Image (cartoon, rainbow, N blue to C red):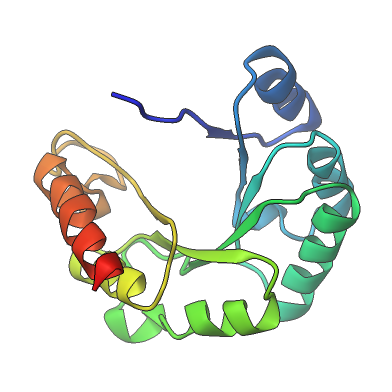
Amino acid sequence: KDIVFSCSGFSFDEVDFLVDELSIPLIKVASMDVPNLPFLKHIGGKGVPVILSTGLAAMEEITEAVDTLTGSGVKDLILLHCISQYPPDDADTNLRNITMLWQAFPDALVGFSDHSKGTAVPLAAIALGACVVEKHFTLDKDMEGWDHAVSADLDDLAAIVHEGRRIAVA
């Protein structure tokens, strides 16, 4: 299916395993690790692209994280605007942060980590220029568990991909 596998590492050993043993092509860093500068420096030394979620971080923390990652060798960095609620109220999503991140970090790409229900919000993020959309996936939104209701199912994922490509071209 030509899908790139990646994963978040939550410890030094996990990052070493993912990059050194599994040879994953990029590391995703959860927003809770934005202020963990020694961990980010370790990740930066691995020589792989990084996707950094910013949901739990203040601007000063994001700046320190970006400086740490790029200073330790990260050349390809994507920042994800994220609201760490499941699901967030639409009024709290503040998609304009995508533009703000671009302006603050012109050498990074910007994407969106979505926890909303449906497809409207991630499609709006694409319209604002998000180059990556991260969305949880489920086979059944009615399954037991805290995130199935906010996850994309097969139809949602197909709509995000198909309509997102149309939006990006337009």
